[in-house]
Length: 146
Image 1 (cartoon, one colour):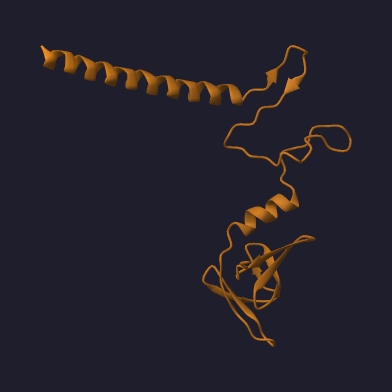
Image 2 (tube, one colour):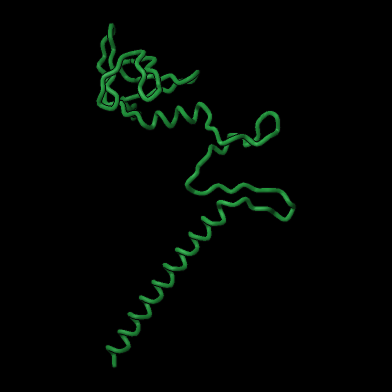
């Protein structure tokens, strides 16, 4: 008798877990389906909802200077940040006459182009890259304050 009750309780728990996981999956599916369509509010203003896979910069205006919606063209800063993500500074070979930097297991000097980024400056602690009129510095020595 106790075995039957115990097995029914276990079966009930398993059934609850299955139903709960199905509900969560359905909720995620509905969320993705609705997130890809513009939502019209009660005041007839269109609201844009971004999916969780697309993460645009929330501080960039969706409207250009002429009042039209911008195309989905990334800015120079966004392009540069995407290119910087592909760079791994392995080390700096410091020499005041000819500083070198090891990026993605390849040695480069000032003026070399790596992933469309130009090596602009090499110091003993950092590397500065240029892209368009923007610069980005990667520091290899972490400063700790005690």
